[in-house]
Length: 366
Image 1 (tube, helix red, strand yellow):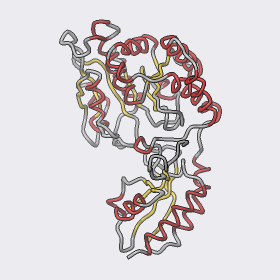
Image 2 (cartoon, rainbow, N blue to C red):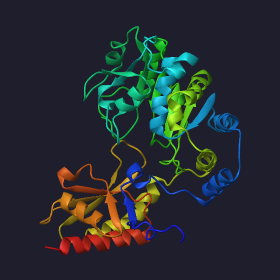
Image 3 (cartoon, rainbow, N blue to C red):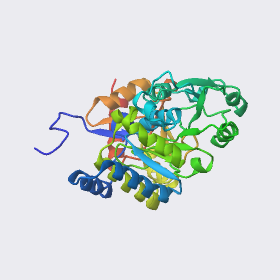
């Protein structure tokens, strides 16, 4: 029997939540699957494959070097370990040794978020100790600078919609502080769409997710300074061993980046155009009021925002959307305010009709 939902007794899922890990993140193209198949059907010297694909991507991305890892989270842990160990073989085999004094990783307090796991867990896995700078609603360059000590190994900046957006220093400002004190800056840009701007802004190691904006297989990418990438590769003999990535995903992800640089992703104008009919139909349902809104972090992403004003709460509607087959997953961040958001980047017209039909059924139920 071929693979199917039925074979494993799985629900079909309509992903109106966005590029979320809990749903498998994104779909891959035929081109990417062909590259994965080639990888799966052949053998390679894995160290050579890692270095050669890294060099190929570095040329495309106009950086000194690049390394494909198993995920953006692995990228954080291995980047931290790399900058603490500084290429020392003893450290690679003994990552938590007391011989290393510089373990502090300075992180704006508003960036110490849980994106599925807390940022500080990944820092700790790499052997680092989080030192928070500033406050939950504010972090300036001065707040970061005052936390630097002889034990500081690096500064970490999380560029994400999960983080506090207001009154936060920019990547360029964080880079200025880091470089003033001869410290490296790690930028976690997991879901970001621009593969150039954060290195250009001063990031020394910049991390991307493979399966989010790039729409590749499960993978992560770390780009930046050649020496730091070499230190990161050494972690394959240390903490990175438990995070190794397979040959099929290395080649699939490399192809996904190449395709992404040529074609880009769906722009905001296209999303708004596709959302128009959906919003019109939702507004015809009693108890629901819909409009188009832009991503809260300012990205060129537009979503359907639905205010639930009937007898049922937004949380009840969300639960009922998930309960059936197909299960409809939405963005739940504003459920306490009675709002459900629909991210349609991975939703086609037929699936949007199914969502509308399910909302009609839910709002008619007593």
